[in-house]
Length: 539
Image (cartoon, rainbow, N blue to C red; front, side, top):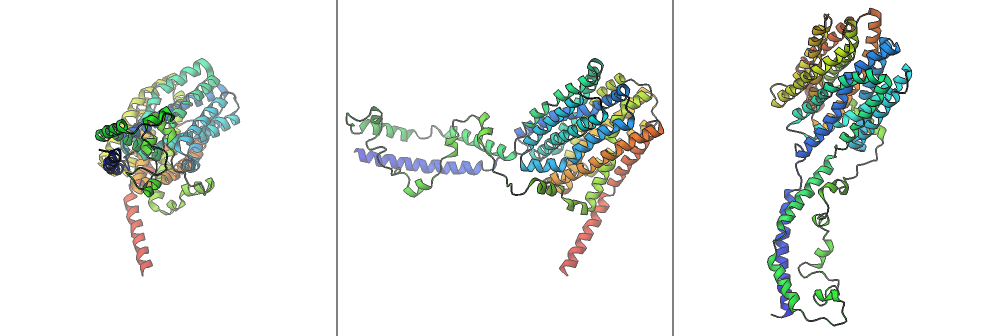
């Protein structure tokens, strides 16, 4: 067989192999076009990052009442004065939610979470440098609160986005991690108060908040994760196809062996190539010129030498539209049209009444313990002991929600009922054992709330509107904290006891639970009005 015949035979074989390979590649491309990011392995990595953040949040919040009691005892502040500090950071973390949601869409949840970790660290660290109540309002109240809002909301959003089938379980696991922080943080904070005082405790708590940056770094955008999974599948498939063309390699070896000799003056490297190779710009005989001109470089070939650990740097997500300013995105995230929906108004009213009471009560327990002769050390041990009950309550409610045994709204009803009953029991507490029993019920309701709220909104309005519905809900919760805690402090100073405060707060929470039972009636009436309006418009 002549040299030219071998070229044609090799070209035909290569063309057939290329056609077969391209056909297989097309099948592979179709197969890996849209990898399943939701409920994947990396979804649990995101949940682990959110869990780390909730450990820090739950630990600091559950032990912060000990710090407030120390401020009253050592600095001589009144209950009304120290009540402003948690009111500011709770309300700040909720009220900043619209801005946080807009920033998450404009940049990413990862960027916003890292910024939140830096702000929380600075707020607590600066609080250790002052004993002035107004300076604490700025550092421990405003700066720390804004940082908490930037650090908390991205984790909740990412977990809800990354899970579909196991969303309730994932939310319950991340929420239960807050109870894990409640196991050791109260004992640790009480030990730091005894050893280093209030300034040293603030500084060390600020150092702990730097771990928020680690959790935020795991919040990989879903588009980037989808591209990473696609490239990984392509690489695995390519490795399986590597030894698929032995006949072509053998013919190429024969072709090189029988090619005419090159002149002596030719470079030594050129001796390894067929004669005339590279001298003309015409493409291979296996493909046409138009096909070669329109052919793009293979993404699998380009990324063949890139390690999987480097793909997060190599893959660039599509550029988000930046025509709308941040303020326009904030207004869009508010979604004020939700306030025209009677069902949503009923939901946020229940949230308002619940959050006016329960977070406030958790901060009042250490000072109420001093009122009934229970020391701060005993209260710290009690909170640490109650934490496993909190974990069980969060996981159990998430399990029940995943089983779809009842509508998600009844989860909020159970939360308000359990929390209101526990707070009402505090009115009649006289001893440490009674305080322990009542607080066990109260802290279980805290876990219920963080599990059921995002799941209920997703059930009513879908995951697509979860960001706006949760943002507006957090806005109302922020207003509740901003008003209820200072008023509770004034009521404590006027009445001389926390029992009056507990009675008022339990009434608010039970009222919010009763309102949940009206959701079916409100939904039916809203649907009837919409149908009548549609008939009127059609006529």
